[in-house]
Image 1 (cartoon, rainbow over the protein chains, first blue to last red):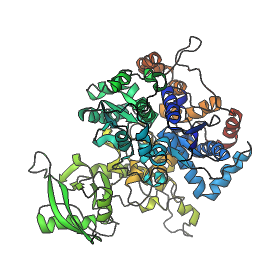
Image 2 (cartoon, each protein chain N blue to C red):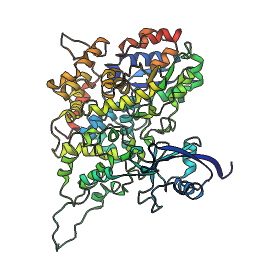
Image 3 (cartoon, rainbow over the protein chains, first blue to last red):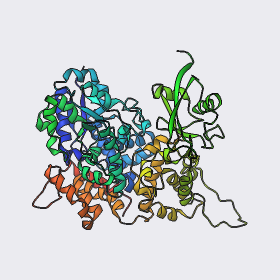
Image 4 (cartoon, chains in turn cyan, brown):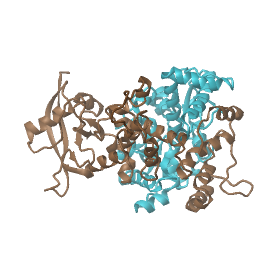
Length: 298
Length: 329
């Protein structure tokens, strides 16, 4: 296999509140021999909120990010479901509407850029599963995750709307997704089968509709816990932030203790590939997760 | 493989008049390649149990009566080929009503909440029309194209009963009502757009409680993409100056402020800016926990303000904001 090389759109979260996401992503790439070029020029994707304020501006900024991947002639990979969704929505809008593309390019021209539509956009989860390949990952496992029941939490923006994502997520069924389950199996962990795996965590209304947010996150966590999960794993740092950082608030609203480590997808892979504690960055979790490093080796 | 497949269908059974709890019953049948989910429901009723109840009427995907859920997927039974779903779900199908908690009998639910919310957004053209006008009220093709797809809504409830925000918050209008609000607000013959934007901007009931899960886009059998209309309603609230400064609108607009400064979203600043300093007491405990784990940092002795990284070529982003932004809060 020739070396895989991707342009990484980190998103805001990996550069701020979840440094462990970036360090574990780079560790996984390093262990697997995947070359990563970080798009240091890329701005925030708007996270769907900028889109609510000014959709056109959001398209302009996302198109600019994609321009930098195009300049490198690389597929742009994301490590956040919401970055994936918003970048892919802009790509789809521009590729299917020549008038909009022209309007956006008129703005981009002012800063010397042009959106062409030549780069694919793909979440790191799907580059691992579909491009690097599960069989190849299996060969690299040094610390099998056989001690853990792992609840896969897919996050909305990688699987819905399926029509938008099907080109980049290998036709994942949004009502019964399997990629993360298969990845867990490849790392020799035990995937937890539970109904909430494809549901919403409520992150996006954390501020304005707090009750809704806590209940949605709580429902999913309780479902995972009741099905014997030792940890949850998600490809989306926003799901991670909601379910890791707000466990006390969630517990109060739904009347149940929801203590559960919530790992980023690359952290789980890095753990199985024998990454260092520093690369895993488990200390950055609000819910204690540092014990997992030792438990994986027990 | 032949043209038929032998399968077992599980169906939700419940009669609100006689049953305390719902239960599931299995039915075996040979399914043909051209059969629809509605055909399978008919066969449960005609070949297995005459008491099995569901709504059906037009059989042409236009009345919206036969919408149910199959394995959690919103399904218009008369439009959905059964084999397709058998392939999608490994030959195991479970028929359930759109909303189990609203079940009256088997697949039949009480849709009162759907109709109340639909009516609340005034889903009709409101205009002063002369009794004897001199001209027709004309509309260009482009103008009518603005709401062409929204007009295809058959009020089946597929999006409404797939919406998790609505499951939790009974006041929330839900995606179908928002599609209707959008459809009439962008109709050039209508004069009540602002009123509808006001109604759909209110906290708890309005568009700001949308959780952005895209379940509605996935559910719609007419491919209307309700959340796209929700985003348009958000934008129109700013364009038409209906949006008032509150936690939700500041949260949307605050992204520009952050991106202009850093290129990134400033995660701590967006909370402070959206809540206002007075609202920050709600977040102190969480912020302290995040400080402890290193998720947010102290800088120069000031709490909640991260040592913000900046993107490369930030000046480009600043320029693009200046020349592309059209809305204001």
